[in-house]
Amino acid sequence: MNKLERIKALYGKKKPATKRIQHVPRDVFKPTGKLTIKNISATPYDFQLHGVEFINHHNGNCILGDDMGLGKTAQILMFLHHNPKIRPALIICKSTLKLKWARETFMFMERSKGNTAYVLNGRVKKDIQEISLTGEGKIQETIRKVLPDTGIFIINYDILDSWVKELVKLFPIHITLDEAHNIKSVKTNRYKALKTIRKKTRNTKIIPTTGTLLENRPMDLYNAISMVNPNIFKNKLYFGKRYCGGKKNGFGWDFSGKSNTDELHHILSSIMIRRKKEDVLKELPSKTRIVIPLKIDMKQYNKIECYESGPAKREKLLQEAARGKLDAAMDWIEEFLSSGEKLVVFAYHKEIVEKIYQEFKPWAIKVDGSTKARDKQNAEEEFQTNKKVCLLVGNIKSAGEGLTLTKAYATATIELLDHTPSLHLQAEDRVLRIGQDADAVFAYYFMAIGTIDEENIAELQKRSKIAAEVMDGKDVGDFTIKRGKTK
Image 1 (cartoon, rainbow, N blue to C red):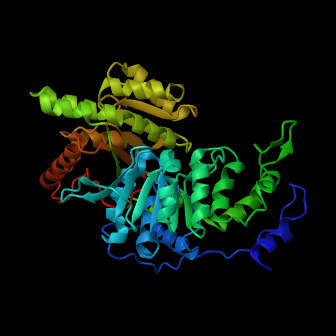
Image 2 (image 1 turned 90 degrees about the horizontal axis):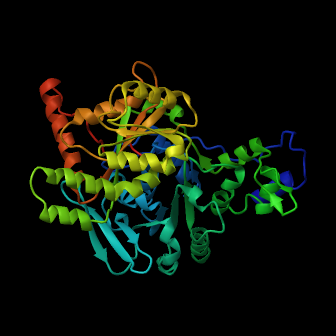
Image 3 (image 1 turned 30 degrees about the horizontal axis):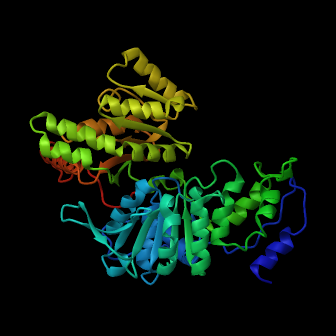
């Protein structure tokens, strides 16, 4: 009796939802702890190696459901590095994360033809960017006219339907769906495009990754599960009736509820590995910095670069870089908040702070230079105690000191100031709980490629290193962006 027949035998007959259902037999995965990943510049955590073992165990066909910040990107890239024959590999993600994926190939993959990252852009005017790094760690792009026959190909969900013909011809052996809840609706062009690619490439393996696969209801899970293993459930109607409290409402079937959740969890755990921050806290450092590189429209920025001069030039460049990043940063913030976690966002210019605040106003509070001392403390209390308030956005100088914001475990910085590492350090520490075992802190920094941001990050690290050498006798500064051990 095969797996599908066993499931049919167990679940073919209706049973009361209140009774405990007999579980589906499954092979319980236990990591050996013996896996090593060679020839990479980063040092993975043990739980990340266990994740790669799980993916290997499932032959690259499973769900990676770790919390945000625990290294889903790292685990996918290490899996691909460890299995060099799984090429071409396709990674589908949000547009804001394409360059981050490309950049991290240099951390978790040895340089080779098959490990070269190509970023796919555009709908009508398409281009293929081959990504490389300079000696200083800056991203370089080389435009290719045609798709190479092997490598790591990175595309965003929004343009997937425009690249179907090219991707089918490429015939990817493996697909990664980053933040896989983006394909939960079968009505979207991205889902239809993905389904076409899977159908025409037949045995392509797939890994949906997300810490928020189930955003609202069990039905959110169905597409990801069926992509990994279409034989687990009879069909969508069966899934909806059994696990979503399915009932007819006069207009059709209503699958907005839940039912038999223990049973669904058991089935899901046979194809999914999921670790929460508290599960691996002992392995994590107290603070991890993660750079999110973004490509911006350089037209206005280049005008300032060419025609401006004097002391105000750097200020104008910093502000224009922030404007260029703003839409992508707000998209990222929205994605983060969908996880149900709170977030603290820092910026420098009043315009940037105000735009972010207005975008998320129903769920946000603001602290800037005009905020009075009493209102500042009220904002802290509101953020710490009100479950509806999930975002505090503030000026890095005004909100970066004197506030306790430990209900969040992450900060996101929109504008990088090069002259004072301590300013960023104390801003990060608003969410750090001193003197107790607390969730690890993640500090995200948005960096506009080819702008003053790249100089500022390098300068922050340089100044931090000098301060550490003089004050503490250390050769590593406090503001160090470690390679590896990140999302």
